Length: 382
Image (cartoon, rainbow, N blue to C red; front, side):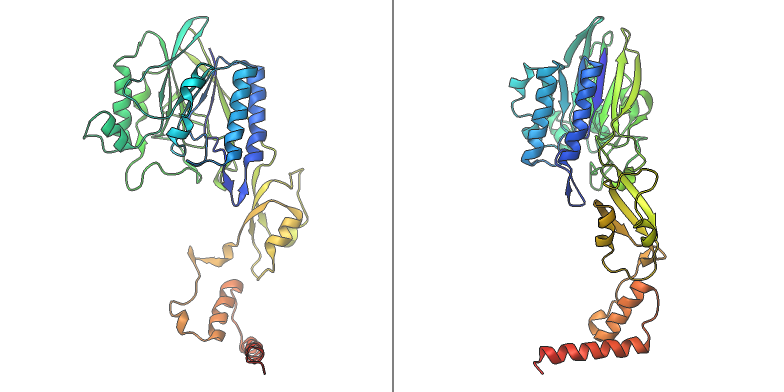
């Protein structure tokens, strides 16, 4: 059986004020080309289809376009689960109708967990789904007051599945969770506040392949057949070195799998540039794309007037600037705690020192006082 595993599309994502829908549509077009070329038997989408529970209209339309094209043009069934960013109700809307067309959506946890069965030349493969659910939901669903953390919740659900699972058949699990040993990035939303969200990888050993979502780096956890496909594209500058794409799995008659990560290259990548402003303004080197989304780290020590404006004339999509010299001993230099009691001259002197790392001299204070005097004269109508 030929399987495509993807996750964490986060449709409708806004990155530093930039709507990423067009970038996501570009990558999903590339994904559809892969579907056409590979001709998979099934596509697995392991949660976080949308970036928020109430997605914008353009994100909904994009999902509709992608799903319709895959189902209608290429007749490939899709199994999709809700992630912690998704609304189970909205994602699962119309799922009964769409199931007849090959779209299987698992939004809410139920006790009667039945697999989606897909056939190949060797017989059936059972696909079990565990959408993201809160710990309290699992506790209530199974009436088990001993469930207090994600690890206990996952153990309960998987044990429940095992109770009716045919271990002589090939079995695949699609889940959205933080599995122990996985590497995080800055763009994942924590699954819990104040509690442990990590689950044990050993719980998945009964399955021939485990298609995970939530962590944005493509990686294996615990075993070769337990995989995160990673996110559709880079969603934070902590991911600049990630290679984004999908997992292509080939499963034989015994459930053994061959796994290949296939990269999807974006039209506009995420990059970090470090240097002095004058050097950076000379433009891209080594054929780099000036339209990439860029974080610039400036090494200049003095004050810079309109650094963002200057940089965007060369790199239109600079979205963030860092000035490391503003940080001393890992603490951001701020105004004195008693700044409300400080004179205007002393307050500006403190600001000047923070920006330039040099002293606001008596000569500068005289000039600044003259400017203030002129300002107040104008304000008084003198």
